[in-house]
Image (cartoon, rainbow, N blue to C red):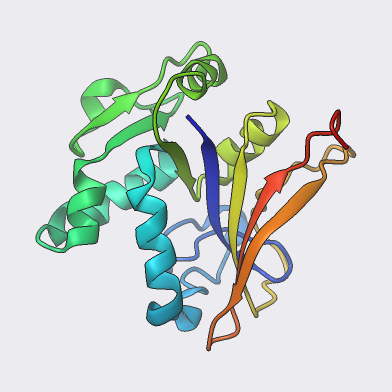
Length: 200
C-alpha cells in the first residue's frame, strides 16, 4: 500500500486548522479556516475525488479524526461524504480508546507502536493509505521514511506561524515533482514523491 500525505498549506508552510476557526487553536493560532477562501471547486474538487477513489483507507491523527468525525456523518447522501463515512479509518492516538471511535469504520492502531502498525499496513497489498491533515503524524511518517507521495495545495497566504508538516531535523529529503496545476484562486496543487538516494 502506498502512503500518501495530502495537505492544505500556506506559502510559509503552515498546515494548521485550514478548515474552520475552532479546528485547532493550539499555540494561540487565530487563523482557523484560512484555506476556505482559496478553494476552487472546479480545479480542486476533481483532485480530491481522485485521491479518495485511489484510497483504500485513511490514516488520521486524533485531532483530525475528531474534527472529521464531527462533520462527515451528518452529510450522508453526498457521494464524497458517503465515501468518507464508508472508508476504513485508522486512527493514531495515545488518549482515545476503540470504544471512543464512534465514526463508522474507525479502528485504533496499537498505542505501544503505532509506527510499527503503520509499517505493517504499508507492506500489505492494496490501494493508498491517505493521510489528511494530521501534522504530527505526518512528521513522524517522514522521519520513519514511510511516505511514498506528498500532495500539497499551496495557497497564496502567509500565516506567520503555526503547525508545519515537514521534519525540522537538519536532514535532506529530495523530492521529485510529479505534477502541478494552478487554480483560478492562485493555489498550486502539486504532487511530489521522494527520490531514492541510492538510485540518484
